[in-house]
Image (cartoon, rainbow, N blue to C red):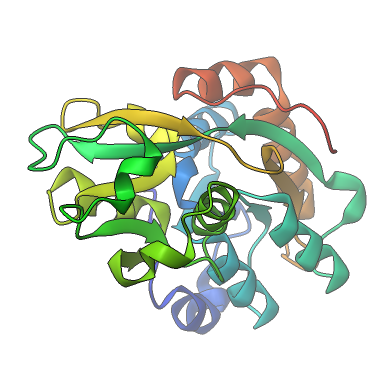
Length: 254
């Protein structure tokens, strides 16, 4: 009975909020968490008979905008610390429930049948590399990390005419797997999910660690259940699920 809500999520969910059952739990999470949170939602429902988890995946920045506009969300999980910081500054989350629960890495990927062979990030400057997929830096954490990494390598400005922007990291992954771009920049966990269609060229450096925070949203209407879901994500069982999909234990800033 799980619904994957995206696109017009805010308008739709505000419109039907009165029909949501008391046991419904709405979780908005970064697109890169799709596989792991789908499994965690099943575990939560199994441990809490009669409950239902409604999953909404997308770019972290877009999800924050939805919450700020009044979408009835109970749990918020982002792919970066900065977006959760903004949620906290806007007084949208319960600060005491905030915690980093996973870490990730940024990688350069290419289609398995790529027309252009790539060996390193510096190869992106070659004339035969025409299209590079990455998330919109202003709203997609993976895109912001990609910009940061390319700036560190001294490549960002010189490649601007080649960028093909995705609305979230999964869209960039699809662009690359279908060969619509010559290369893409995504999280390692996303690349691992499509090893049969693409290859990892190299791991990219970022100035700050890629950490995933989670928090209970204020006024979501189901705080008790939201806290239980956060506890599951942070538990040993939750960690095993996350590691199954390539996530690492969090280190550094909490």
